[in-house]
Length: 293
Length: 335
Image 1 (cartoon, rainbow over the protein chains, first blue to last red):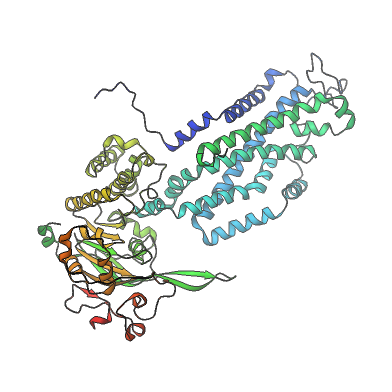
Image 2 (cartoon, each protein chain N blue to C red):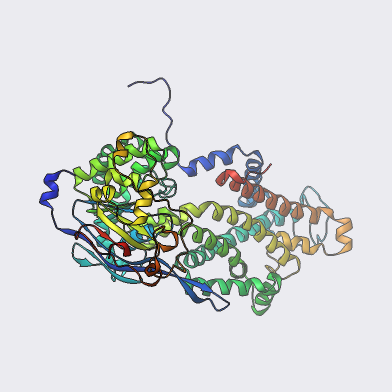
């Protein structure tokens, strides 16, 4: 049988979601912005020949010039180089903290939602405990107790303090899936617990997990900046956007050197906005019914 | 079912259910203590012979679906034993039940909820083989195509997803999934009640044909007598977690003993006038099913029974055969 029409291949629900996502203009803009920022972070050494941690004490707080496009900071470090390398730290911290939280959140949420009973009780009460303490207080206490804060430790602190919200979402999704007939069906054919979790639960819960993980990455970047701003984040001289704004906690710099703090502020704003647009786009793509407007 | 196979397999019990009870605890109060039990299945015994179809009929909430799930060990019974091919399976650990799942399969009611929407038809149908056998990818594919053609699906549809199919087609996928590992017993939990009437007949006929071809034994759960009439050899009527009457199909339709069964028969809409030859006892069931948490004392049906008398509220009637061992009824009218 020959037909001039192209035979349409069957599309999996995931492919359908991707299609809907690409049609979303705001989300696509978010992707483009995020890709540009990421490229800037990756190719930082090519875009600026300055060392972001090297301070030339003879060139403190210089105004922008050909050599230093955005001038220098209070220790004579090149602001443009710090902006680019700061993007690295922000993205690395945001992404790895999100990934770490995702692993803890999905594993604990899956255990709680799948097995229920005592396991569920134990995990959820632990989550309640962490949620009961204001995040900033908890994070600051842990950081204050540690002697030296490296990026790894910092990411761990964020992950350990933020997993409960994701765990709750995963658990809730799993609990509702547990009552579905197809899960009974999988048990009826003799599928193992692991198979049911990985083949039946996770693919059906992947939408909310991806959406929340994306949105979480945005808030992780904010957290990093905020902690760095109050001097409790990644210590100087490592360049981060929060550190750069922190340097501008001074009326003189604020007034006379807007080039020192507006770019990192804009960087945070654009990155977070872009990620949030992507997250919203993913939500609409995975669950077209939630499309209010 | 041809008479030839029936004779050959005569009297061999495939499934034997002894005094099965399934109580769901109801937790209440601050301490989450068990305050009451929902008696979904309350002391049910019956057996199913090889190659026959036992229809189980009852209203929603009568415990028929729970019974099916307890037999398959998707739920653990509170009390009682289930013998499958002579092996007691109700006390086994889940891991030990797994090999038995090759021989016992289930077709679920909701054709939209019973298939994982994230898996393609090929994945869905091949999953039992993947879980239960060591067949290679190619062998699984061949078997899947073979069974798809048997249940009336096109082999080209392998790569499609459930959302691209109608309810009837999905139910065919469910049937293919249940039959691909050659089970002996298939528990059908209202497999056609979510389908259009025209599709119902198609699916029922398909199931009958497949029964002959693969010499299957069916436990066929339904909520009205008109559907089971087509497919069953024997029929059990359940009310509030108990079997109130069990009989060969002919005896049940022509000479229903229990007032509840008579009421169910009277509620089947009559279209063809030939059917009216069967003399119908005019019994109308009114009201709703009482709560299985707090069932009536004595006979569970007495609150809705037009023939109830004093004894019914005091003494619980036993399932007995007033005339023969084949036709059992739990009603004081016959004792």
